Amino acid sequence: QQQVKQSPQSLIVQKGGISIINCAYENTAFDYFPWYQQFPGKGPALLIAIRPDVSEKKEGRFTISFNKSAKQFSLHIMDSQPGDSATYFCAASVFGNTPLVFGKGTRLSVIA
Amino acid sequence: ETGVTQTPRHLVMGMTNKKSLKCEQHLGHNAMYWYKQSAKKPLELMFVYNFKEQTENNSVPSRFSPECPNSSHLFLHLHTLQPEDSALYLCASSQERGAYTGELFFGEGSRLTVL
Image (cartoon, rainbow over all chains, first blue to last red; front, side, top):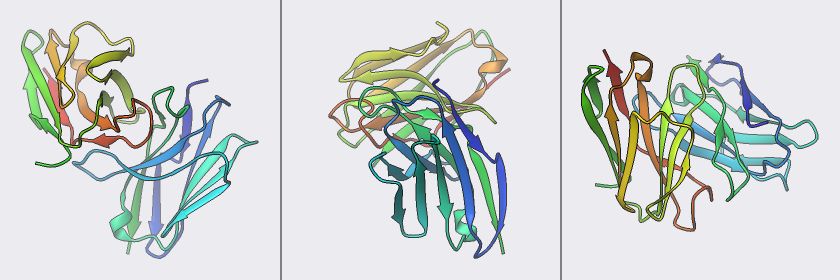
């Protein structure tokens, strides 16, 4: 119930391509879905987050798509750049009530 | 100093040693967290402190002992660790409305190796 399943484990994308990372959850009480980005040697940092009242949120080249009925959400990175190479973690929580539950992470490599 | 600062960045210790990890946040937050990050595993929440009070202990072995003397400082005292405790230990803080209310601000972590 508390798990967040993230795929793929690693991803290689050509520069300019679209990177897609998927997450699925079981706990229907979850109502906050952030994505964190971690560069080597650094701590994770919030990239973008969504609440279930909307099905999509876009910030620049980064978009979260949310499917409440399927209990899935995904991160799309448009026009992927080498500087986007990092590990991406999805997470979920009951906002204000439970700690974030993280996925295992996806290591993204964007190659020129 | 800005953000969340962790020291030391790297630590090597034997199984019989006693050491401590330190975390300091300069963001005015009142909730602080310890997470364990191991390869190919989800970030594991260890402890949560909200307004200096421990509100979460996620079944962490007693060889890990947290201390939160004030809202800006958090320690993780380590003793008689096992090699499987080798990992990156991340400290985080969040906004003063309380824990779990949004963005976590992480430090860069302390890389621990237990021999």
